[in-house]
Image (cartoon, rainbow, N blue to C red; front, side, top):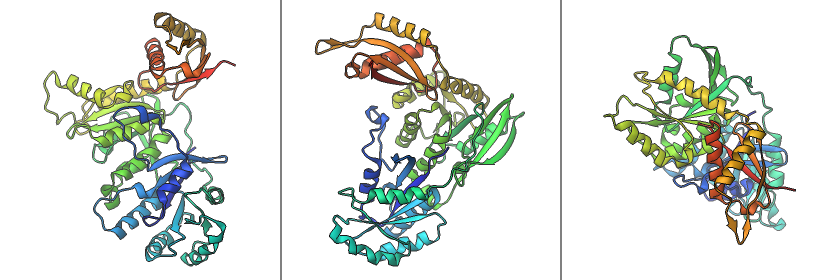
Amino acid sequence: MTKPVVAIVGRPNVGKSTIFNRIVGERVSIVEDIPGVTRDRIYSSAEWLTHDFNIIDTGGIDIGEEPFLEQIRQQAEIAMDEADVIIFLTNGREGVTSADEIVAKILYRTKKPVVLAVNKIDNPDMREMIYDFYALGFGDPFPISGSHGLGLGDLLDEVAKNFPKDEGQEYPDDVIKFSLIGRPNVGKSSLVNAFLGEDRVIVSDVAGTTRDAIDTSYTYEEQEYVIIDTAGMRKKGKVYETTEKYSVLRALRAIERSDVVLVVLNGEEGIQEQDKKIAGYAHEAGKAVIIVYNKWDIVEKDEKTMNKVTKEIREHFRFLEYAPIVFVSAKTKQRVHALLPVINRVSENHSMRVQSSVLNEVIEDAVAMNPAPTDKGRRLRLYYTTQVSVKPPTFVVFVNDPELMHFSYERFLENRIREAFDFEGTPIRIITRART
């Protein structure tokens, strides 16, 4: 089941980011306390009543040195490509401007539903300001106020009415779904071709769940795989190259539909900030992760190079300590065959269940070895631990007071669980609850 995507489009200074933040609510990112991951929130998940959806703030899509109107056009194009529903945001205090008319003209070309919102209508007396906006040709304008949060409920009701009925492709549970993510030009497409060029592979393309995604399914040694959204890797064109952010959007949708995510790095260029950002999304989504260092054939190396690069990757991707690293060359197909066994293994770990009795023995031993710290004279007591879900494996620890569970002690417990059971390649979540 893919979440619908909503994009907020409009000329600058109409309040896109304010509305984005209002709709998202102040969601705290899991990755924010991890060093080395910077987040600019251009994309986030949100919910309204019973609907979960993803939302894009196109204002955050920086299109470099392009002139003003060209930027507006490209942001609108990206929204038309990626979104299921578009919120066209205008500013009630300034009336309809020529830039609004330009955005409207671009949006006329889309088959996607467009909901018109007029921002900065801060009190009921200002409501008559919305009538001019009928001229834009998108039906009833919705008066809202980003600064006061007024009218957002009605706007979101209208947006939700337009969500597509999920006609998506659902794959059986035993199929391993994986995606390749990374900056443009790290070699994702060549890697897919190297996979599929292996002998004994049976390949077919299937329409993916998102409107224009293409998934590639294949079978190798009786295991079925689906590579999620290979279309996103092949997309070329002006917009897609001018904005790194676009590749992030595309990657996010692929991540959401995958079990295993291959974070592809370019050995020729080394590690860039953008790599960490994209990998951070995979970690945050709770997916199994493998770090694939591509173009290994080009790297000048001696017997120490692999250790040196491994150390550097670990340094940069501290939040992915659990992810195995595989060195490959898509071009020469060097070690590409070694990836599939790793994908199988981390996929298995991602959906592994641990028996409660064994789990509790491990936790008791851990506590005996390193007792929980005291805080203001009170000691944390751990009563019982149980696994509540898989993909990623999630554990609930019942304690006397969750406030006493320090971040570092939680890390210690996670490491003990990892040592006892092979959770290589998958994040694990620990939730602390008070015993009632």
